[in-house]
Image 1 (tube, helix red, strand yellow):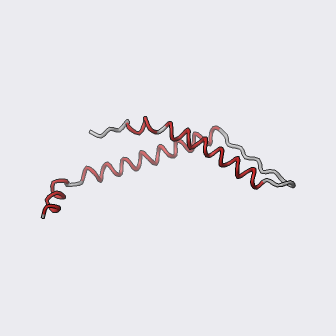
Image 2 (cartoon, rainbow, N blue to C red):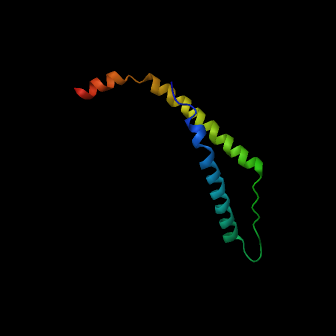
Image 3 (cartoon, helix red, strand yellow):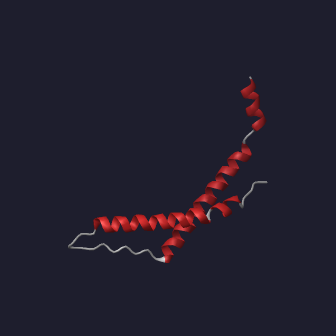
Length: 85
């Protein structure tokens, strides 16, 4: 049986760090490209964080499903036999 809940423990910390660093990057880009004649306003809504987090979770779950199917089909004993020959 695979440890499926392993990702649940490691996901929130990098996600929070990613959101924080994304905000810092957005602010620095906004400040760099805003000039004396115009100002770029950067607004990130809480819904945007939710959508991005759910998107990452969905893609990660899909990839885990696809890869687990491939891993279950591997014949490890046959692979070891070929390596010994």
